[in-house]
Image (cartoon, rainbow, N blue to C red):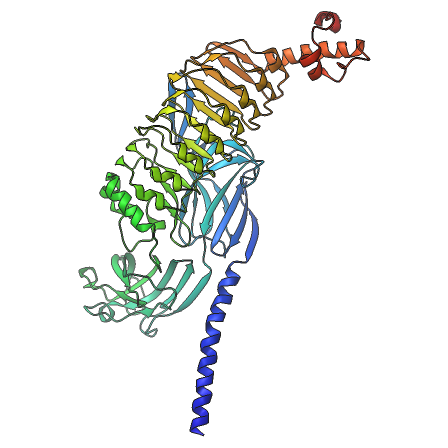
Length: 601
């Protein structure tokens, strides 16, 4: 009988051992199921799609946010350059977009810079709007405007009815429990939430006896379940309210700071310290975050901090940079995915200097790199590593105001996901790389106030999504390329301070979305080609002090239309009766033209 029981137990253990991994795999597989929800907030709609721990939100505002809601700074282009205007109206309040429901809320508060679009920002049919939102998403699900700026990009649309995209990670696993001695730790309970490698813990008690549990070798308050434990000891300073043995707060109320530690074995304990010497009982509700594994990007950020000399990161410890027990998502200016891979690095105005280390090229999940100057404190980088060309997922590269030297790297053409490339006020030199025609997703290219030289590459006409193009350099030469007429989405061209020569290309009249052409301080012939009057989108052409507005172009359009209509009526059998476009290109001058006055009469 004992033998039978032994073999039965052995078979049962083997069966359990074989089933448990399958159950875990099945649970992880269900995490990849896609979920969708749409919520309406005060003046905005938020559509949320979740795949595993990743949440993508599309926020649509049917009306333009009030000026008070966009705070921070605004950039306006003038003849003298860029004018920075503060936008901090007194008494303004942050605007709430929507409330994210449970199951989609972020594990940690996030602040992202979101570019506004007319239409769905995830669609290739959307157009870039004229605003950039700084959006904060609270762990309680509140999505608010946290400041922003208006971008006066050439030909840019207003932000009325604009949409923008956000991304964060949420919990896919949860566990809860009670303190080790619930009789003494009245109400003591915990909940841990995990998404990827990121854990958020909620810890609360109405009455916890401190003196027995806070000592040189303190007993554990509770044990974090496996799968939720930190990869290294985590120490956090938190606050609690001093209470008596019945859980009644003292009068007057007294709040003390104390420390909690979580070790890799899952034990959660008080940290013995002088602040708790005269405290009998504490009541508290605290939140802690940690990682269950080390991100490979942590070493890169530590290298960046050491070699780029970000003196602000060294001065202010609350930026969390360099803290080994703080998740990278909590480091100021850093956003990560659920597995700790850095997706956004926005360090404008952190006082960095010197050379960017080549290790930056190992941030393989990076989508935004913004090292531009801040409003009060500037960065000062003199070079960027060749490894930047390895960041193939990069969408926004912004180096405005940096004294970076060297030629524009042709190897950046590998960054085929780029949507914004802004190098304004940098010291880049050399020719414009024809290879950049590979930027098939690029929307904004800003080379204002640089030292680039040579000719405008005709090959750039293949940039299918470019909407705004800005140049200013005293070393550019040659004509405006007629080949750029094949840019189907170009809305604004801003060229200033360049000795470009030649005429305005007649072929540009075929650009379906061209709105503004501004050519300040160039040698371009100011005569607007008559064929430009056929453009249905063009609103303004300025060559130095001569500016032609849309109504003057439209007057030419109507004049030519009348001429073509009359000619079509009188030439019933000719090939010129198929409308004014054919007439203007092929038939003008074949017969005497009646005057506009005669047709009008």
